[in-house]
Image 1 (tube, one colour):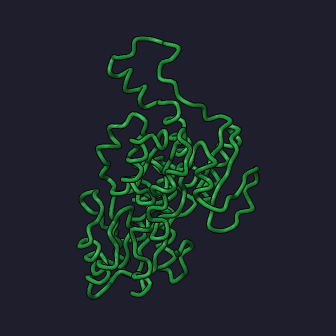
Image 2 (cartoon, rainbow, N blue to C red; image 1 turned 90 degrees about the vertical axis):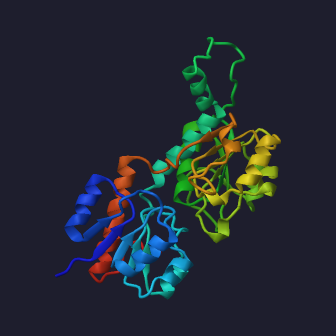
Length: 320
């Protein structure tokens, strides 16, 4: 029996690739840059399925350009799938799956790292030492702010938001407020749900964005929300880059509307504005949210389970 031909848009961990090769005819792209619209269209008309990753351009134009369509499933490597036009996929009869849950702990850890690094000026201090400019301990040198005992505001109280809040409340004795589009009652620790994202911004010392990407969350963090934050407030984004209006964020940081920001994702990723790069009160990570081997392997095997189920005539466990 002929095995399904599956395009992997990027190379995955070795164990995942080895397992995939046992089940499918795997074709891996030669370079690791995001797929263009043209590449996505070619994929849709040339392969039985695909395992796309972040930023691969499976948008409406790609679906419209592919004739005829051969692809039957896009098994996304990641929980977020806003780079895939799921409505267009459904119209063309293509199943879309994702990998929820596998990324939760790793992403929550990165959020806490960004909070600590920004509040305690860790990256700025590292640069000082590496540059040979540190002259020794001084009572007023590089004063930051405490994390322990402060108020955490979470915007988006899904799996990841809850784990961030859990770490901060139990580990740092932080009060927790949050906003979520639906009612959340199962947090298992004290926290308060507020009526709006702006109310969270006004109440918190640290505001962490953990919403799902997509049209509904585009520029959720805009000039108005930033203006609602306290002047000593720190913004952390580990969701999707375009959730934050970067131009508005830069203006807010330059004007002292907020004290700092910790970012793992960017609006036009991988491009990062020079204005942000030049700010000492901003910590910038290269999208490390799930960058641990355990998480990446779990994501890969979950995507393979979705592919296996589909081609076995079953409903994939993580259909979106």
